Image (cartoon, rainbow, N blue to C red):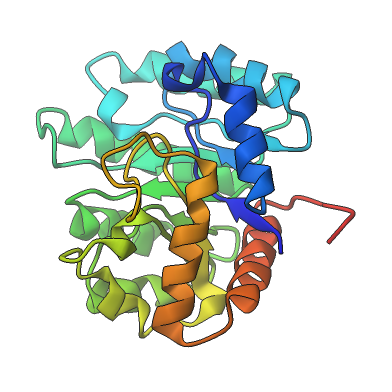
Length: 261
């Protein structure tokens, strides 16, 4: 059984002391590959460093996270565009709109989001969308930008059935299911029950959103198995099928070629 963690911040300083052990534990649990989203220019060097050190295990993205957007966001967008030719990136992300922490720069977030969607389309790369408390704002822009060249994943999905239905209408988008699905009062289980496995990616969002039964601890790749087990339980399909289909979905979305699969 092979699993892919479609969203991991394993480059974060929280893993500086035991990153190799974390990756080894994940592999022992069947989690062989990790997709690494970018945050902003302060993290780019570390994302590349980890991707080089764990080549063919960790696959980097490039993008500007909405919570990193302020009055100087144009320079950060330029950084993204400048870096693209320098290394092989597998997607643009994570990008989007976040209205949970701060609404001060909402207009700048919208501009940056649209800009990066267009950049992704021009490069034929998938996008990873962060949509915390912002589905309406995200949908307004994606509705306008959606075409045959736009594809990606709504990471850490925590929306309603209506939100999921809207995403499914885009055709080119998946949803990332993480630790929230295991929370007693998360409510996502009822939405996942209506999903087709062909639309699902699995993610940890390490070191955040640790699933039950490890909640309260630092999240890491090996915990993806608990998310996979929960999805298996909800959809009433074998765990091996969840692993096979979500791995296929992830590798196809990010155009990653793995010989053993």
